[in-house]
Image (tube, rainbow, N blue to C red; front, top):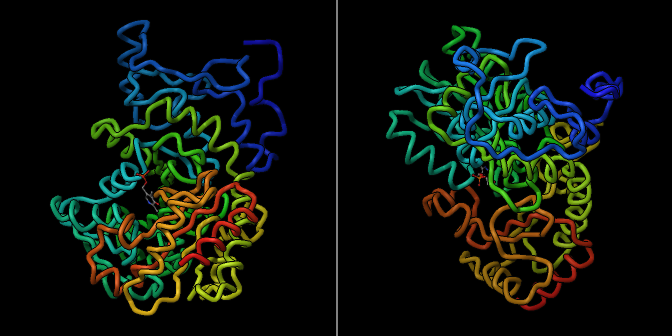
Length: 436
Ligand SMILES: *Cc1c(COP(=O)(O)O)cnc(C)c1O
């Protein structure tokens, strides 16, 4: 232990704002006994030396059995169980999302599937919003049924649909807000009230848990656990990772679920690698607030430009006055100071002669070939602005009929606004719109 005052004892930590806290973390973490690194070291050890058989036995005994006893360092055994770089990221993610714990997985999908598999058993069902990220839709409709778990897809913008659909075997209500890709919002507090009314008659292990995918908003714009969700899932690949170098996911939730998720992760094995954790810990999370504040300023400019353009039929961005769920957006999408935080994602549709959406496809192709600062690529939340067509790309897993019924039209375009000067983004979009 060095002579200088350890960060843990500095009075500033508890008063610090989130953006400060995510840069400095706990400063000196109990997850790693270093004291002079300014940047946390990257650990790269699949296995850990144990001083005695007794220490090894204690490590296995303590794993997934509550917190490390006060004053002790965790006993690391093997990367897949727990390891220090990832554990430090988890400490900071739990703080960002205001949960008791965070656990990191190899991808966003690994995190979502872990959360559902831990909460559900064969014979159970979940109620989910009818529009979901394509891979989540496929998980719910192709894979859960093989495990004898059923997904009941409803319109969760009407929370009454939960009571109409749920039965004794319903364990989870699942949704994204904003919904990928159409930017519909689901009222987390209203879902909480609807689920509470059902849970009063249920024992603890029968109760329905609310799981929210917070990927689109990121914890900068929205903290589902504060709004009434039980569990928040997120793809670290997107806004939190921010630079597009690594793939990862996280589950954040209440202490009562931590040990079961740790056991699940140990045995199913989809753990986040420490190298990916390090990039997210050192670059992604500390810059989230600065990036998101800039993304959303530019997103507002771009959304206004598109809305006024004669070739655009409609734009969905929670920051616009025309946004259909404006009141909910202002209630739910807030930064930690309570300022409106509509995020970096928008969805728009061009005017078209018919329903085939060909002008949208032409716009995307023109951008792919000619645009300097807008890139045709899936993913989102990165420093680079990305554009894609959900109908045929990220949401291809949804059946044709389902997409049409659910308002995902062939010509719909999803835009993730990055850190470029917004004038350059508008110039590229203007040129593309002129050309189609
Ligand atoms: C990308 C995405 C996921 C999946 O995350 P991966 O890290 O790609 O596995 C889940 N939900 C939403 C809303 C996403 O956009």
